[in-house]
Length: 70
Image (cartoon, rainbow, N blue to C red):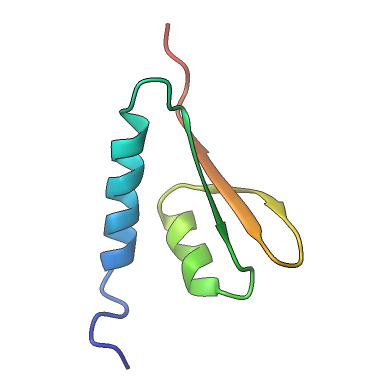
């Protein structure tokens, strides 16, 4: 087993990338696609607040959106 597996590094990196992306002007949504047969990747996205919005045989699509402010 990989010594880094299960320590939360991927979740931490994903949260940081999403936070950074959502600070960019005009960015209100971040999306990701993973293979539905990869439960670890699905779980990382779910832990980071992504919502599943589409799934087909090859790809599960997730997104996280910030509310628009005026």
